[in-house]
Amino acid sequence: LWARAYQDRDYHAAIHTNNGTEAQNTVLKYSNLPKRKTLTLSRLLLYLKKIICQMLTVKYKFLNFQQTPHYRSYNDGIPTYLQGRPKHVILHCLDRKGSSKKFIYDDIKD
Image 1: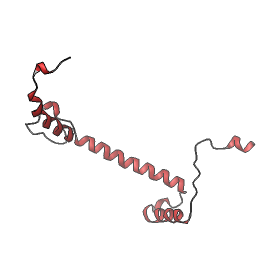
Image 2 (image 1 turned 60 degrees about the vertical axis):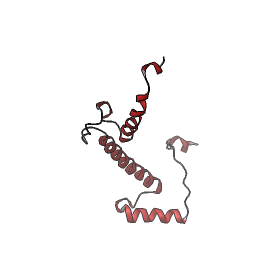
Image 3 (image 1 turned 90 degrees about the vertical axis):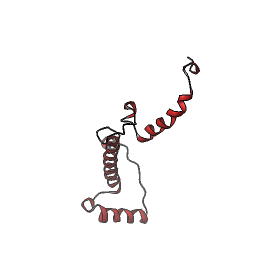
Image 4 (image 1 turned 180 degrees about the horizontal axis):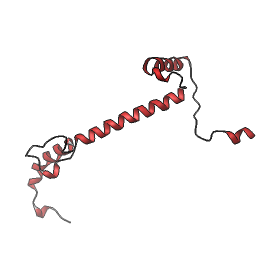
């Protein structure tokens, strides 16, 4: 009972492995992560999660930057209110612009 007082309170999931999982763990550590050979499987998964999250954050920021007017110049045919929007939004609005001309002000009701 006294051992529970010193027990780590963080959540730790029990991971049961077999020879295939351990073989993949060894291949990953020795082939792709040579500086991380001493990590346990759970620490290795946390490390991979950290690396993947960092890569996805960089990709997300770059994709957001691509949508800004600082990344590219716009055609004169694109209205200023559509500039800085994602490409699919610009194309959608321009496609619908022609069909919206058939409506008159009286067709719109509160």
